[in-house]
Length: 274
Image (cartoon, rainbow, N blue to C red):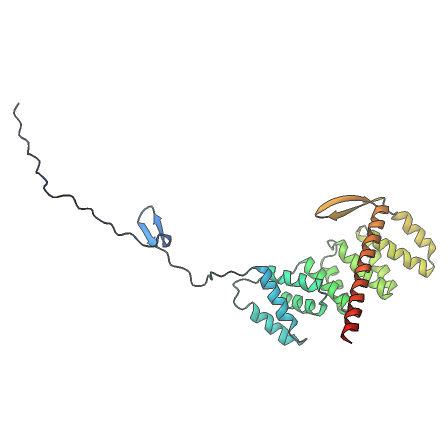
């Protein structure tokens, strides 16, 4: 069968390479499945230099220390510190409170916590315990009692034992025995088991007041335990009470030696200056 086909043309010139324009910055493009690449522009509100919470908390502590005790000045400085934050920097404030607690700056702790609570932030039992401890250390007994009454009325059956221990120790050191007995009676009514320190404080008061019958009943109801648990380097360790007492004595002796060394160094520096 006869068939006719067209002959292919002879290509005399060489094929030229065709360059396809591509975007120079591949980081700013995202390839889509349907429509190909689309540009991505950097967001204005995101800063490239990020500051960690540790440096922020240190800056907050240095800023607060330079202020006076005027409420308006402290609150204004704290408001200006968080003015450009998208969210309330709760972690930064908590770390700053920890630094102030280690430095025993009780007035600053009270000011920062009250400012934080006025913003509606950080309303946890840990924050309230820090505030109660700071009020007691600063000598504001009336405010500490008001805070305790409010917490106890709001969280009647769910009040942590650490709050009972703290308020009983406050009343014990202030010599307010009647109020201490009332708090201890509330603990027994709610079924909260008192700690060893609370039992020892109540027993000492009974002995001072000559209530030996109540002291004997207290010792029978809450005998001293043979074992106690302590957290050492994040691990729960079971320790005998005798070993625990020896450990506490050693720790107290080390702290006393450090204090005496500090006092001697201060006296030596004063003598050299004079």
